[in-house]
Amino acid sequence: MRTDSAYESWVLALRAWARDPQVSLSGLPALAEDDYPATVFDRLITHIQTALETVNEAWLARLQAEIAEARSDFELAQTLVASRRHLARRMELADHPGLPSPLRAVLSDACTRDVRRLQDELETAFRQARAQSPADASLWDRHLEVLRTNPLTGILPAATPGPPPPPSAPAPAATASRWGHRRIIPG
Image 1 (cartoon, rainbow, N blue to C red):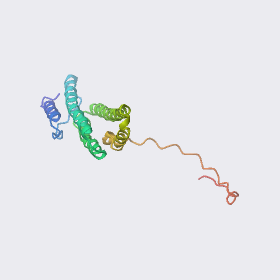
Image 2: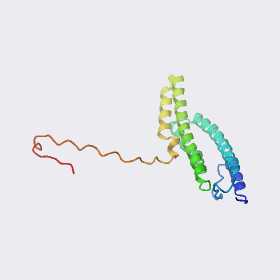
Image 3: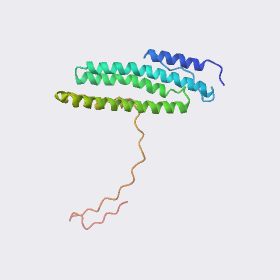
Image 4: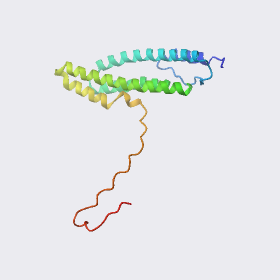
């Protein structure tokens, strides 16, 4: 087991990261699963959760205020795109190479779910605002379109393509009179 201050470095960095968006997590030491007992990793996870909650609360309050202050579709789009920086910071923490792989996987999955949930919640809020204010329906429709055009999910890695589709059935032979006498055999 390690006796150095790698754990302490992580805790101090997480606290600073939660307070200041300019703080970088680069240069933190790598932690392996067998470096510390499970109780130490449990405490580290608590520090990570606390940092994420602190950052998320500040970000959400700022996002709500900036959405309310947006005076045009362009300003709304700027707000949404700029808000991705916060979400990208979350992804950077979740995917930090200094964290053990199993922890990175859990954090990355949670972050991806949160970003998708936030996108869904914003779309729902815009639809509800439209329903509550029929006189402003076109405004909320435009806002919803801007949100879908500039989604928060834009920071997520592209989904890996699935397996190729099965081969399709051969095209039927041409039946036009000019080609009717020819037989097409698929290669």
